[in-house]
Length: 157
Length: 157
DNA sequence: ATCGTAGCTTACGTTGACGTGAACGTTATA
DNA sequence: TATAACGTTCACGTCAACGTAAGCTACGAT
Image 1 (cartoon, chains in turn cyan, red, green, orange):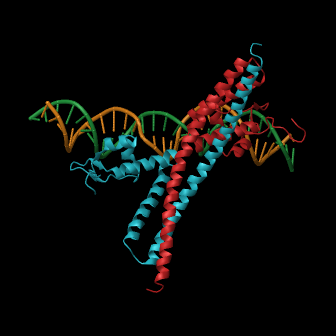
Image 2 (tube, chains in turn purple, blue, orange, red):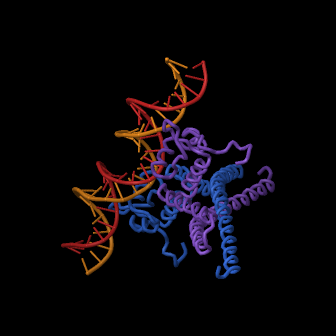
Image 3 (tube, rainbow over the protein chains, first blue to last red):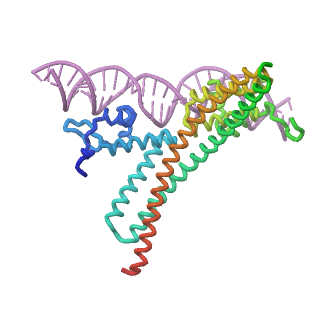
């Protein structure tokens, strides 16, 4: 860690982490219960201590929940995949023979592709919806222009 | 209605409408309870009769629910806006003075813009996510290529 | 030392969005 | 005209995702 950064050890208490993630403390405890986010550490007295990485994880969970509409069960599955992916990445970087590295890479690419397909499908549907709304807006603009013209044509009918 | 089309009177029974919309009968009755979709008519005996327009409305509701993540309360608000918009459209087409038509148009455009902004925001976030996933995919592809090269360089190490 | 704030566990409550009978009426068809 | 399939209205059940209250503990400032 470079000098200048204070570093991101397990310094955040549950309230602080919750606020940064935009959720409640209860939600954090609930997520932990589900195995979604386990705090990086604990104080001597047993209080949860979160890192910035934990907060990032929380934000990712909210994104998957609110943006993609997954339920927490599906999110758990996804996060497990990503955790596994991170583990694979470590193993990958640690070296190992080429065959193993290829295996790892293949799995990573597959996981990525699955999520990508879901996101893309959703985005495309949103795009279609947006296009529809845009067409309506355009029609309205045309009508508005016509009205202006009509008004100008007969200023005081 | 042109000859050739049977027309879309209130012909669908609840089971048929439900199937076409991809939901359960219970859901239709529930939506009616919430004032989201009131069947276009009823049989002599009191059975609900839906039109194709009702089914379209149902599909729109599902879209708002699943794609945009609105709850049924928010959807009710949106649908009310759209109903009002349709009413305005009728009033608009019926004529009326220019000032009134401009008012109507302004309101319609405002309603449209609100929804459009929400959809666009969501789509942009999805786009960002997709871009991120794409970048990861690209890195993986590069790594895969490197691995192939390494293997070719030392065929039988 | 103490006192207020924050955190901990346990456990029951709540809200949205339906699912699932029960008991009964309606409709299409053989 | 019988009868199976479909419909109706209550009304209670369920599941996820938390909210909330109670009773107790830990830590930071005065």
